[in-house]
Image 1: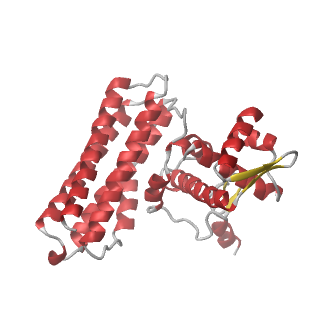
Image 2: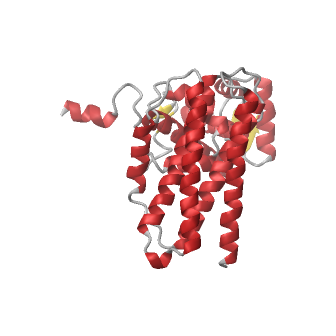
Image 3: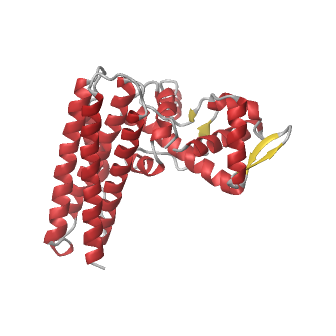
Length: 163
Length: 150
């Protein structure tokens, strides 16, 4: 990220959080479709649990981000349309096997972690006043980021166990 | 996208527009920084082997610099297209410039999975309009205009 980049308004902050919501939608849709598309033999209990947890966690993160956006003084974006768009794209996604699923989940978690980390850094670098309390905002995003970090560790552990 | 990537992208676009080296003043204008700041960054890009600076002529990207610039331009195209097509942002160019520093290439790759980008990308980026030539910059896609004319 650029040195000195700062989030300077409710509008910019909301836009970044909207991008976070889309990333979470992507994780949720991919996890769901991996679960649906792969046959019984390709998915054992551990991977099923991982995908199920990933989808639930992403839905929870999305709701927490939406709750923050609702408190900012900005126009909302119709997320039903975005959900439909993501769903349409991932309806066609078919990973070949569980190695592909695990790698995909690792990319999802790493990308989300990087995103929240950059956004937190940009908020902390800013002196702008937001409609939401800054400490509460950073705490919410840090909690989400930490869960993404745990996700990276979990997928990495499963991948290492299967080598 | 880090600062160096934003600079190599700007140099690449200026080289395309000028069909030659990018003048330091023009680079400073594009990056909205002072000529001294632009010069300082050019020195850093030279030391990293991404650009070469010739006095009184300007700065030219090396082959490695061109690869970095095209990757950065592609990331920028993804951000613009995502803002315009997915979030329906009217001022997508201005917002893309604001968001560019905080959207990393790996995040753009994820966003790229839900947009339809032209296979020519980033060659279809028009530096004059600061947008992909296939992107809806005037209220209508070029393809739609052609269909309407038919």
